[in-house]
Length: 181
Image (cartoon, rainbow, N blue to C red; front, side, top):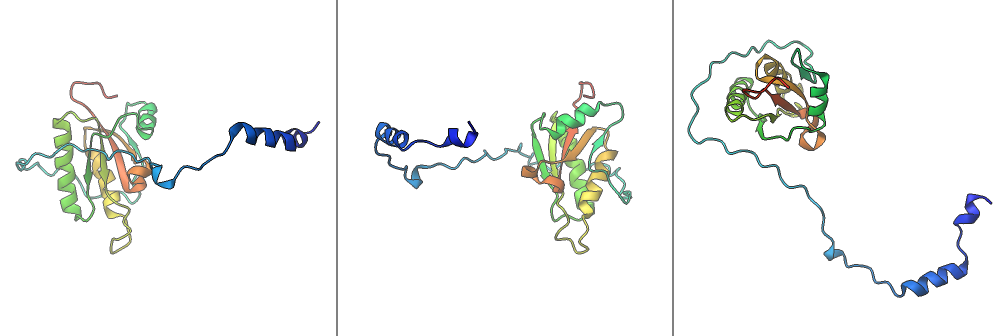
């Protein structure tokens, strides 16, 4: 006996089913709820201006910047965990529309503040460069270069699509008093 024959139902079976179920009324459309993810809550910024931090980051990025980064001595599993959302994002910074100088300063202040608060995983949105004059992702390249220069940055990778994909980066930070991983 083939699978085709076993799938077909006899007219009597269909009639029995309809008799057992009875009259069916579809649910009205307005009673259906569309599920939505709760918006990510970022930590509030302090209202007082922070003390100026020394600008120690270089703007001389290599022509090709890495999509991901892992500090020497750490297991590749760390990067895999970061990609798979093992650590929840605790805060974020959006660099859209900033000049490279302003973005560099904002990033340094943000990373310093995150370290002070003992944050483990942060999101930095730099954009994809779609609206830039040259059509080049300048902030993407510079942001990733700057992150490799910061000692508290253990790893980074592209953010998941829901958080900006290649236009953002998930950053794993070293937490004071804890081992590197």
